[in-house]
Each structure stands twice: as C-alpha cells, then as structure tokens.
Image (cartoon, rainbow, N blue to C red):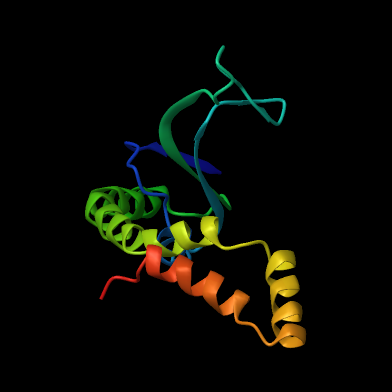
Length: 143
C-alpha cells in the first residue's frame, strides 16, 4: 500500500524525524520519503542550465495493506498544516548559525593549521592563535 500527498515547498529543509515520529504511531507503517526533484532511471532530470527539475514537494508513505489510509492522511494533513510555522522556526535556527558557516569558509585548512601549530611550537610564535582569532573577530558569534 502506498499513500502520496502533495504539499507546498517552503525554503527550509524538512526535519524528517518530526513526521516519522507521528507516522510510527500508525499500525502497518513502514517508511516514508519526501521529495521534489524529478527523477528518471534513478538520476535527477536536469534543466537546460544544468539545475535539477523540481515539482511541488510530496510525501510518499509505504506500509502494509492493513495500514489505515485515513489515519495516514490525517497525520500528513496535520503535518502540512503545521509545516509553515515549523519551517519558520527552523529558518530562524539556521540563520542564527550564519556566523559559524562564515567562519568555516574563512578558517585555514586543517593542514595549514597543523603547520602553523608546529611552527608556533618550534619558533615560540602565536601564528595559529592569531589566525583563528582574526576569523573569530571578523565573524563574531551573536549574543
């Protein structure tokens, strides 16, 4: 048995545990997936510009024949109704960590940092600490 339900796409990625937890309460539930990329023969279909072709996001639930389809529909409908507020919360959490993503891009590679630490130990310098602190100062953690 399979049940498919379309729902609108929002900016934030979905946290699958939210829906999986609710679906797990339904007898006969096996698994589900969410998606919005068009796939053929196991590969994403690409537009002329090379970007993946997408459709409205959908949820597919697989389970046994004794799974209550009305219960699945009610669970998914509740999830879809709750999703905009949930997505907004997740977007706020994501935005709050922009500083960490910016820092990650600016830190020297781990190989460079190891080399800095070696030379600091041998030469008695603070090159590594200075480099890390410069990145932290340029991208401060919000309070």
